[in-house]
Length: 90
Length: 104
Image (cartoon, rainbow over all chains, first blue to last red; front, side, top):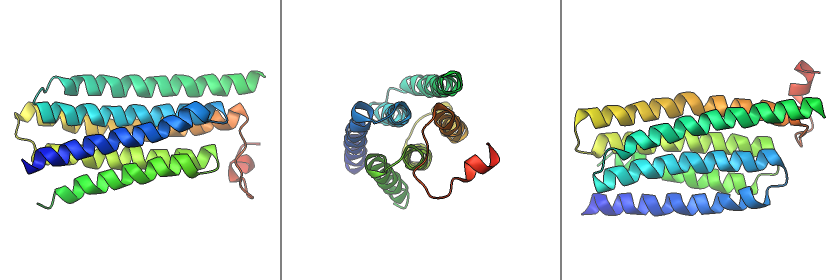
């Protein structure tokens, strides 16, 4: 089926870009670089979960994607607050 | 047939955003590329999924909620990260730093 192949190729390309950004997470010069890389990877994982739930027909995974997006945004805000406070203190 | 263009656009934006995160010289330019690729690419891919899937309407509504949440939350987190990185002490590698004019 043509549409299935399209979705599978999209899945593999998203995994490839996530692996590319892993370099920035591991070898980032500063702390904000690593945080930006982690944030981007998590959003890509949200899209990957939505793709898999449509491909396999298991629609309960969409709830998991929504919860992961919310956890990612709250974690990003907490890390930004941590950076702000640590820069002001030191 | 036309909605495949939406998926291809999302994939291209994701790929170029990843290249930008790898190749740009600074935290703020990397954040620029990351925000563009996350918001635009993810939203267009999810809109493609909404258009082409054959599923109950509740599932499509959940995907629409997911796209709406991405559009709301992702720029907010990026703004907070840029502000936190500036307060953390990372200076941008530019000639004119207009953020420092407003926030001495």
